Amino acid sequence: KGIVVAIADGVSAAEAGREASEIAVKGFISDYYSTPDSWSVKQSAHKVLIALNRWLYGQGQEFLDAEKGYVTTFSAVVLKSRSAYLFHVGDSRIYRLRGDSLEQMTRDHVAKISAEQTYLARALGIDLNLDVDLRVLDLEPGDVFLLTTDGVHEFIDHRQMEKTLLNSSDLESVAQSLMDQALENGSNDNVSCQLVRVEQLGQETNEDVFQAVNQLPFPPELEVGLKLDGWRVLDQVHASQRSQLYLVQNEETGKRAVMKTPSRNYVDDAAYLERFMLEEWVGRRIDNKNVVKVVEAKGRKFLYYLIEYIEGPTLAKVIEDKQPLDMSEVIALAEKLVHGLRAFHRKETLHQDLKPDNIMMDGTTPVIIDFGSVYVAGVDEIAANFERERALGTLDYSAPEYRLQRPRNEKSDQFSLAVVLYEVLTGHHPFGGPYQTANTVSDFLGLKYIPAYRRNPLVPVWMDGALRKAMQVNADLRYESLSEFLNDLKHPNPEFLRIEQMPLLERDPVRFWKLAAVGLLLTNLITLVLWLS
Image (cartoon, rainbow, N blue to C red; front, side, top):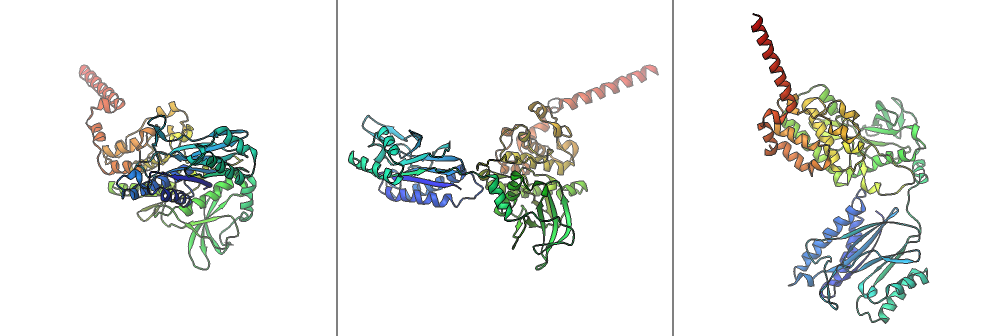
């Protein structure tokens, strides 16, 4: 989560300003570190500040004028990996000293009424809505961040402040000197400042990864009947160049599980090892009945992880066996898969490889498996001196943005979900074979979507419309949320019903001209037969 440095200054006109500033700093630090590890700095800080602001605003309603209640400025620096994240509202300030130059990194949120009179335009607790400035800076060793209240920076000239910082490397004495100067210059306001120096950048190295791995060596090659840490191998479920899956049973409890082991081909590959360890890390942080659960491996002496064993078939097997699902069952399936994907998205994590093979059917309950391609925002923003694996899901189901090198987000998982549902309804891919070879924008725009109701007459036109929208090549044209997509799958959207009412020439011009050509051919044949007779 990084290192947090924060300062707040209760507004002097506010009767509970001192309490507000204390709540802001203590609350931010405590709640920031309580947010999920998988969240990015931006997501974590934003959620916490919104909650703090609403609480302070609510408390301030006991005063006749809310602006005289729990109101405070707030500025924070979060140092994570090789970046500094600055969050700021009000007229406290954040400066950065780099080399011999001191630079103000925030702007004061004040409005001038006259040359002598100003008022605070933004602060925590002043309004129900909060607008926070965010700035992200690259870090360098030796960077010094200075946080001050207006009782300091309004009474010291910028050049004098810079000179004071350059005169000594002892941050404690520098802080004391700045406060003394402000008081000597007539400051009658809160005099607070804070300094932090970056001695060394946080960076994950090959050695860091290998050190973690060396604590758990690669397991030997396993065969049916062998035991590993008290787990007996019953069967090999799957094997590839990258990993192996085994059905195992605990000899003490009799519990069955699936063991995933890394391939020895990658014993010296830092990027592969990081991703393998990330799979278990993600699985432990997602708790949802529609997502496979990680099983605790007590006394583990080798590098592997365990997931719960689900006896049912994969959704791919259900489709292959052509087991019929009526519309209500498909809707129920979609609803449960949406619940599973939301569990990922709430952790600012993308699954990135949703496909029928990665969905196990536990009776009628779909369970999403395989964390091998996940994207985690909070991990991705940590720098590494090796190139991370950018896992790409199965081509048939992955959204176009992966191949077009465009930003990926929750709408990318939405695309994959729509393709899966289309295949459940029709047994086919919505764009056919050409989708797998598409690599450019023109390739994707040239693809022909085949309506689901064309392949399965039981599919309502409005349901096909929802699937088509969720599979737009341009992610901006897809649904803003999975709940909107699910709603249109369950309830007829009038916009999609109009498609059915359109003339065939407008709805499907290719089909119209094909039918017209067939009709013309039949007419000519009948005319020819009549003429010959």
